[in-house]
Image (cartoon, rainbow, N blue to C red):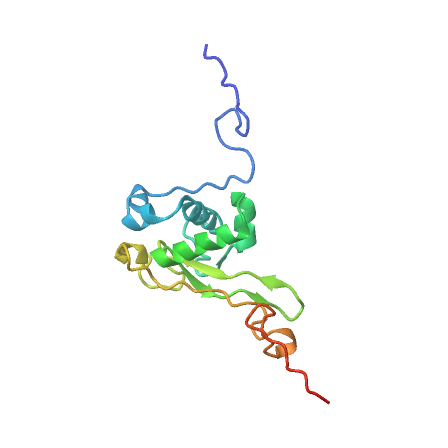
Length: 176
């Protein structure tokens, strides 16, 4: 008689994971692409977390996938600036495209940027495969990355107030 399997931490007796059950697989063809090999580990892990945000196996929410820099930083255990660099790399190598910029709503509720994973087709696309821009990437020929603008680029109250550090000088005193 076979001895029952002992479940290890995070798994049940059948070997299946407990919890929300989200799993993602990276195709071997993807990780063998020169663009993937050129990514830093933080960018590779950011891509995996973006794949977890897919709604189903067909990625029916592709083009509307949202993961903020702060969320990615928290999940990866790195600084926000490092996580932002991961998103930039993914855009430069053609793995993701920003479809909608981050915004702050009228009610003050923030909305992170939306992404398209170019590996998968958009839901409304007529062709069954994604654009796969990363296949066209060549070393030294990065794609353009969208940079998110500063929250208030013109300064306080819309007035263009120069930085205190940027070449300020004192007004001359008038003799009077």
